[in-house]
Structures are given as structure tokens and as C-alpha cells.
Length: 84
Ligand SMILES: [Zn+2]
Image 1 (cartoon, helix red, strand yellow):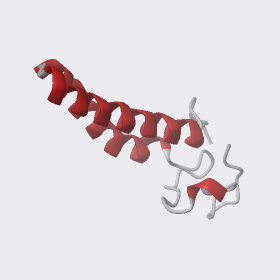
Image 2 (cartoon, helix red, strand yellow; image 1 turned 90 degrees about the vertical axis):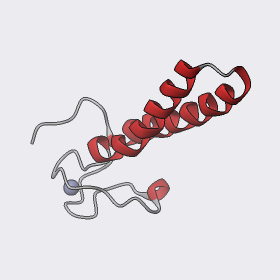
Image 3 (spheres, rainbow, N blue to C red; image 1 turned 45 degrees about the vertical axis):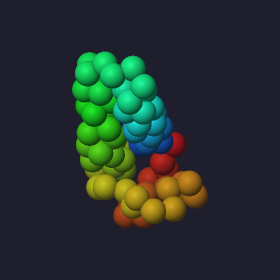
């Protein structure tokens, strides 16, 4: 099966970074009142909701991985492929 260029763990880190930066920009726009910062923050927060559906999948069987207890998830619960 074709492997994704980005691993599920990298995807999850990217997702959390998007969410964190989005929230920070949301807070920042309260201070500086720049609309484009609010728009970028909103796009990042929306991306943080969408990214797990793209990246948080098993690289071997392409099934979605569980979203709970992700820190000790070392292999796919469906096909036992290692998640790195
Ligand atoms: Zn799998």
C-alpha cells in the first residue's frame, strides 16, 4: 500500500501546532484588532479540525486510528502495522 509522505504522528503534531497557532492568533487579534490575523487564525483552527481526517490514518490499511490514548499507540489496532 502506498505510504503517505507524512507519518500519522507528524500529522498529529502539525494538527496540534495549527490549533495552537490558530488560538494564539485569535487572542492576538483581540489585542491588535487586525482582521486578517483573525481570518488566518480561523483558517488554522478549521484546518486543525480537518487535518486528523487526512493524516491520522494507518499508513498500511488507511483506516482511521483511534483519537483517544494516542500517546501510547505504537501500532495500528486493525492491522498491527507500526505507527511512527
Ligand atoms: Zn492498519
